[in-house]
Length: 229
Image 1 (tube, helix red, strand yellow):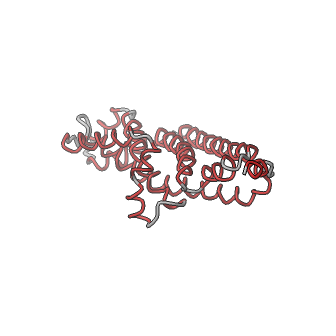
Image 2 (cartoon, rainbow, N blue to C red):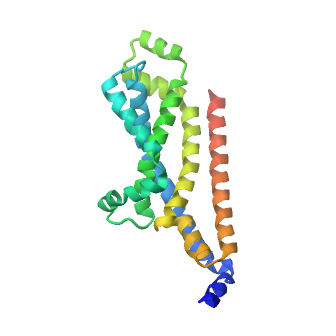
């Protein structure tokens, strides 16, 4: 048995290039789909948190208090624990708890509260004078949110979206620990379990490059948008 383990450790990682590419595309799929759902859901949460806060344009403590509590609870749960807790929910939604598609459910549920707070923070950084000016011209609460708050907060929202995308890469790697596919599962299955250290290092390099690429592109977009203002 030990001889077999050592033999596995001597396998060159180049033999697994096809599998590595498949794992990479699965990670991209998980990140892209989770980001889509999270940005939509998180934007709604963040706008609702801001608008219904005590100093918001639609102040309502009966909405703000329970929603804020729910968001705080969602943010406080470690993602790996959340993955396990949500297994029945994932099975109910997609029919299985394994694979890249199944991972989208906990990734979205785990990240939406975080992005919601990011949105709320970005909206709070908008100059109150602009809101007062819009109100003095008879703008409705909906107009203030859509035509004033969101455009003015756009650089902050994009910076938060970049941060969230990077977080998705980390979370998707953790999801691989319970069979979600992607680079995390690849590193565990073909690197760690087979004692193939070069393969694990290659996976780490791919993850680092992906994170750097997302961060660089995101930073450039934020600077471009801020420069046009």
